Image 1 (cartoon, one colour):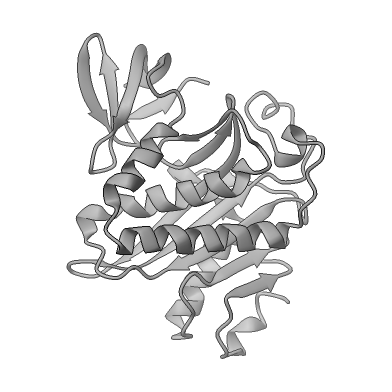
Image 2 (cartoon, one colour; image 1 turned 90 degrees about the horizontal axis):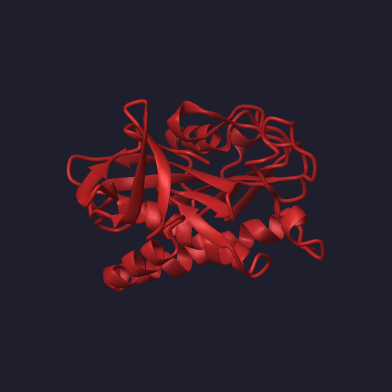
Length: 257
């Protein structure tokens, strides 16, 4: 199904598969802008995405038909703007859990929402929130996962991996993996609805990449040694540097991998 033919289709579906689209996030935003009602956690999946985006304005490049590129619609009930980092937590945990069956060890979440195996990135998440005056109206959760790619450009080989490279016995279709993530997102949203917020924070912080380890970070163009302690309630990273705890947002800190 081509992305330029779907907008005339009016029946909501929990999974829409496109052959080719520039960005699944942009496609879902356009769908909503055209007043096409969608079911909660509708997934837009692309077999080929040509202009995917990552954090910090970077591009997410994926080989056609080999990797997961999908966006999911979250319509939380009464999620205050100050609590929007919960969407980062639930989406990261949903991807983590969906991959843990196939990668049972050395899997972690690199703050705020990259998925790592050892020191290599296997997936990333880009969240775009639609905000009203007091709450989050909806979130579009874009997820990219390297699934079946086994050869990466030379500049990425030391810092990128895939499910196929980590598990030679992996045998699951990409569409099945999308459905697994979809179900995990629904499960974690129910935990939010049940008010078990502390449980979510504990799960997220326990899975943080390099937590409680001394490692190198780039802050203000300087290399520093620090220890990740966790994440503040506003979503900022808590880093211990020379016996002092500092808070950093995404624009202030880079990992040295």
